[in-house]
Length: 79
Image (cartoon, rainbow, N blue to C red):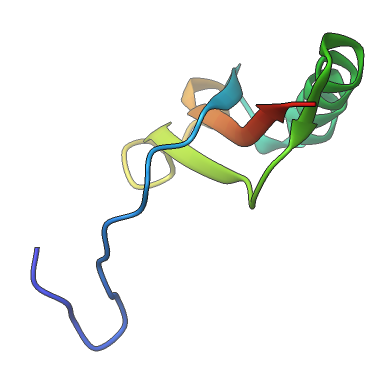
């Protein structure tokens, strides 16, 4: 895609991620993040870069928070 005034596109190297999918309100993001942190700490992995979210169903598609689908992605590496 071409860059715009407010959005710049770039190609990033592939990363290994651990992810979880939240279905419903954004209020549960803290609990989902805590579950990922617990898994990473017990799995012999370490966080390895900034997290990112994929909004599969967002407020742009529906006004009903219970229909939101958000994938929380955390780059990791083996220790």
